[in-house]
Image 1 (cartoon, rainbow, N blue to C red):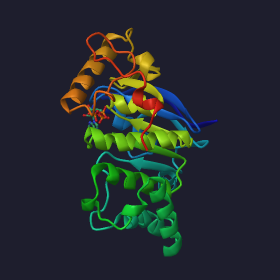
Image 2 (cartoon, rainbow, N blue to C red):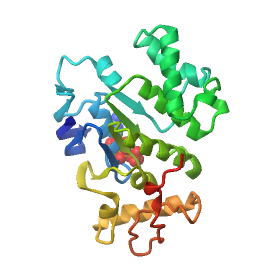
Image 3 (cartoon, rainbow, N blue to C red):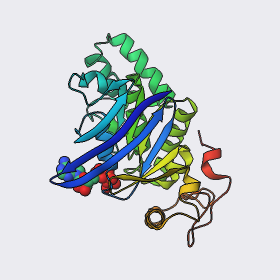
Image 4 (spheres, helix red, strand yellow):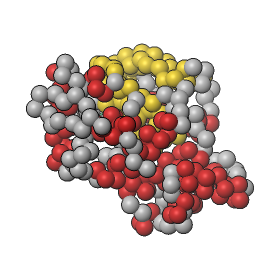
Length: 280
Ligand SMILES: Nc1ncnc2c1ncn2[C@@H]1O[C@H](COP(=O)(O)OP(=O)(O)OP(=O)(O)O)[C@@H](O)[C@H]1O
């Protein structure tokens, strides 16, 4: 069943085309990954889907309702769409538990005991129950991102949007987040994930839409898109990202950050790959 349908979305800023007729569907329980060069419009696309930015044209239908119409309850819409940001957006003077309960108490007007119970359940789902009473400064980057995901899930959204969830993390911390995405995918949580991270795209296992100059240039499985027959734009993106990932220090030779079918000049890949063996 289609959860989100995006049709011919267009956006211009100052006469410059940012989104140029983007169309795609997200089915219930599906994970789609959006990749593409810097400035290609990935984050803007996400923002248009929950009205943080209003596009100039096109249609967005979410749970059967027109998101861009005049009578939309934006607060209700944003409760149905959980957003996870690259920099976690946690309140540093609140504990992990309090960060998760805050929105439940204020937006949902949930009684404290019920909010605590629900928040602890989501922290446990993220394997963070032992850290519930720690402040963000006492947590690693990967743990902070898991708290942010628990907070989004606690609102019981219909879909989770991730905007570069691993880009503020080192490779080891990124892996924790990738494993969570993998877990959520197995639980059939609907997700849309913007990322530059090839490892995440492959390990999370969703279909990838490759955005270029505001258009969906190609769509497919990671290995198909970034395989030996990739077109020059995707090839250029792949090589640039691979170089950056390698410069950022790969984790171990047994778990490289690259898709399964290397292009010319790319590093060979462990065929057992992280997608088949998520760490928990
Ligand atoms: N509020 C704005 N006003 C003017 N231009 C904007 C605004 N927001 C984004 N843009 C432009 O829109 C284009 C797409 O930006 P966007 O952040 O969506 O790209 P991106 O693909 O997410 O890039 P990155 O991977 O670097 O995060 C960029 O050229 C950016 O400068």
